[in-house]
Each structure stands twice: as C-alpha cells, then as structure tokens.
Image (cartoon, rainbow, N blue to C red; front, side, top):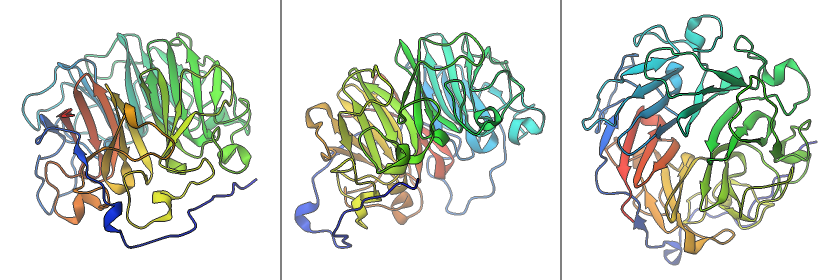
Length: 399
C-alpha cells in the first residue's frame, strides 16, 4: 500500500522578516582539526585518490574519548579509518584502516569476497564501551568488534543481519523481514544498555537488549512497524507518530531516544527507552503534525523549525544537534525548547535560519557545509562528517 504524504497547504518562496529568528552559534569559531581534505579546499578539486589522509563522501565519524580514538566511515572508499589519538593538525594520515588491502586501494569489499574485514558502503559507527559497532549498509549487516581495532584489517567478532561473515543479501534473501534480518542498516547507537540499529530499507529501528555476542542474533524489539515481518513505508499507511520512511541516525538525549527519520523530514523522540513493538514517539521536530512529511514543510526557504532530509543526530549536554543534510546546516535544539514542531535555537553552516545552499552557494570554507551526513558528540567535542566536502571536522561546543 502506498503511503499518503501530507504537505503544508500554503507553500511560499518569500521569507517574511518576522519569520527570521536570531540564532545562537553552536560551535566555536574555528574547527579544532580537519581531516580528509583541506580546511579551505581549492575552488577546483581533482578527483579524490585514496590514501591515508583522504576521504571520499564520509558519512559518519565518532570519538571514543576527547583524546581519541577517532573513527571515520570513509564511505566512498568502502573503508573504516582509525586514528589512535585525536590529531592536533589538519590532514594527518590515519593510523590504520579496515576494508581495503592498503591505503591506496578502493572498491566494494576490497574487490574481493565479502568477509569479516570487508565493507560495502559503511555509514554508521559507534563505540559500545570497549567495543565497536559499524553499520555495513550495502552488505546488509552490522559488524561488532569486541575491542576497538588498532591495526589494519582486524576481523570483526560478531555479525548481525546475516548468518555468517560470507553472506550479504538483504533480509537474507527472503521476501519478508525478520527479527534477525537487515536491509540497508545505516545508523547504529549504543546507550550503555541497548543497541539500536536504523534498518532503513525495512523502514524500522531494531533494538537489542545488550550488545549481541552471537552471529545473526535476533533483535528484541522493533520500532516503525507493528511486528518484525513487515517492512512497508510508514507501516503501510498514512504517516503517523509510530511510522518511519527512512530512519537513519540515532541518539540518546537525557534518557530520550531520538531517531532521524530522514525520509519524513523529521526527528522522532521517545521520552524513554521504548518497551513495546511499534510504540508511538512522544515528540516530533521538523513537522507540526505527525501526518506532515514534506521537506521544509513545503516551503522553499527553510525556517528554524523545518528540516530537509536530516540524516545525522547527536546529543551534547542540553543540546540535540541535527545534521539537516539537504539544507547543508546543523541545527541545535535546547532541552528547554522541546515541543512538537518547535524551532531550533542554534545554527551552524548557514548565516541565518532562512538560508540554505551547499557551502552557502560559495566556495567551501572551514565553517561551511555541503551535505553533512553524520554528527556525533563526545563531551564538548563534536565530530561532523561533511560528506559533500570530503572531510571530517572536529569542533568544540560553544553554547
């Protein structure tokens, strides 16, 4: 059944002056460090060549502690890059990589057979205590290392979504989904007790109680669908507060579970860890109603409370930070402002809430963004995967 998409009834191109809010800055003036590309890239760039210091369309990155390690999903090169400590200078080469036979190589699964140290469009990464979790999206699986790797091509210890490390079919080749299958798992998050995976192709989020230790372990709970077998867009009906279209990144914000539902151009927030399959969220950001799903609420120019394909999300103290990907900006909601459809208070990447455009429609600079896909926080440090600029930048929260 095709889902009905509701849009705002009065699309507008003009921004009224009273709609332009005063914004706070999210980050300090300059990034602490920029990796994968130059801080101020050249106006005309040559094709990206894989090496230990380059990135091609990175979609996620995470810090284990403020001092490191730092891990980057170098998505376009189908590899995971690792720095043992957080670099203090730009363009520092990675210490190790997983997914290719060498830093100068590229290709899905290392142009070889799928295995415990190969990757095909890695898009999500998170730390789980001393363990590491990676969303290996186009292999339709999640990889888990019991200990964070510190050398080239260390094999994963556990695989989810598949029976073993040699398989990579969506939903294990079946028509229906299941508690043990995955289809394009883009986002991963561990809250200290539960593992959350955005199973994007199945339009759902899967939850494991604890970090799985067995290959192919089934999930304990599902969100976005009424059961594990269904996988329809918006649960096969009209959009509502329990349905999903394209879930991506996840975060825990002061005990709240937050999901970036990019396809519905919104953020779904549960007031605590959900305990039942398919339970509705409590708050929605980006839309004024759970039935509305259009980007920027069908307005050409964005506003402080609108979203356009928000892929990344992170919690930094009192702030919920959202990578508003297609608007090429990051928005910040303060915990005191959390209401349905409420406006963000803080902004990064654009000069005003009513501006948009890749790199502000100019040449890239240190504080501009081009399709930021991933954002993760570690204390006051925030890592942004600036995918369109082929770089990852580390910032200090200013608010």
